[in-house]
Image (tube, rainbow, N blue to C red; front, side, top):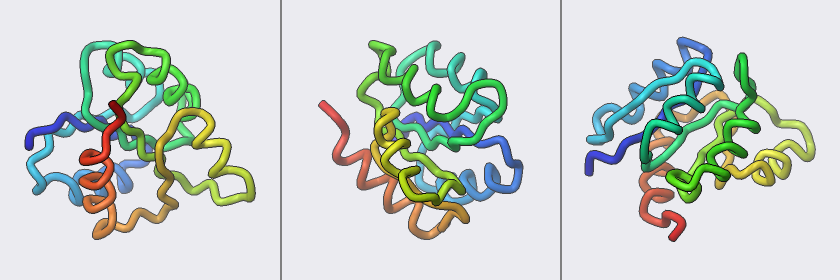
Length: 125
């Protein structure tokens, strides 16, 4: 396995939950606690997967997703949005920005690794 996954989450408790859910699965986990740090890590090299909070300091998760899709190295990387946004139209807005799937908070730590594994298996060409 050893896929490189970027976790982008500004809340320390949620970050801990993400890491706890994915740590034992053999993934290499990178962390960013704001959108600008995520953009910088994305620019450094290829990733296999991104778990992306939408409401972030410095650069929003939607802008991060757009930048991923415009980056030749990572444009096909699957992006799972994790967010507390649950208003009508939010899911469509998140998917339109370039995210491939959406998971509402609170994060289901049992479901997250299953969703990540499924998305990795069905990566964009």
